[in-house]
Amino acid sequence: MTTCGVHGKQLHLFRYVISYQQAEYIVDNYKGRTDEEKLINYIVKEKIWNWTAEESTRLHLKHYKDEYGSNTYYPDGHSYANGGINLKVVTNARFRSEFIINGDGKFLTLLDKDATQDAKVNCSSFNYARQNDYIHQVLDVNPAGENYNYEHQFREEARYIHDKYGNRIIDTNTGKEKIFAAPKLSNMNQYENNVNKFQKKFKGRVLS
Image 1 (cartoon, rainbow, N blue to C red):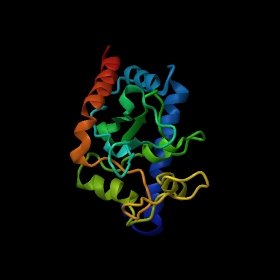
Image 2: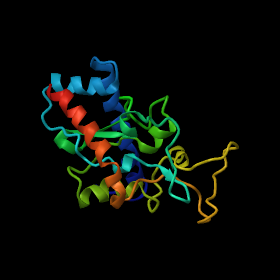
Image 3: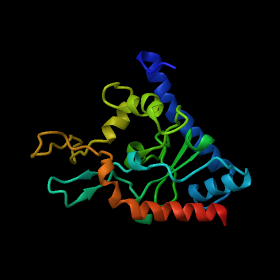
Image 4: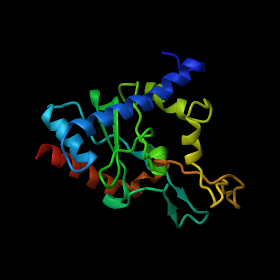
């Protein structure tokens, strides 16, 4: 599989189409008050065994901290329920099919007609790799980075913080545009408690 040139970009963007279609299939075919409940019912009814809620959700918690590090800002539409965590649930060999669930139990997909800024920034995407390893970085993570320029323009723009006129805001300390970014690995411990609670809650509902 190539990740270069026109075909590489098409393959990368197709990941969002697959992910959206998978989420819509769950929403349209299983009962539940929320997308989360429908996913649980899908896992239970279809006896899906190769799923987990324990994959890292770091890349789906993009936010911005002010210059003092005292205030944290999330994209518009972010849910602060369940500790403000966007939970990551994967199926299909416990990795390939990815569902990002916000605190209100709603799927975050890029192509949802009602996608919030949070959904655009922290959405799910199908993984071509089979596990979180070097191949995952090559096929799934790196193509979403700046070096490839493969991302949808509307998704890229959603990652920036804008003023009321729609202009990107410049950080006066760094001189760079303010952008929502994933927490550093070294900072994930501050989310650990809330992540564990959400994971445990989801797993408990599946196994109950």
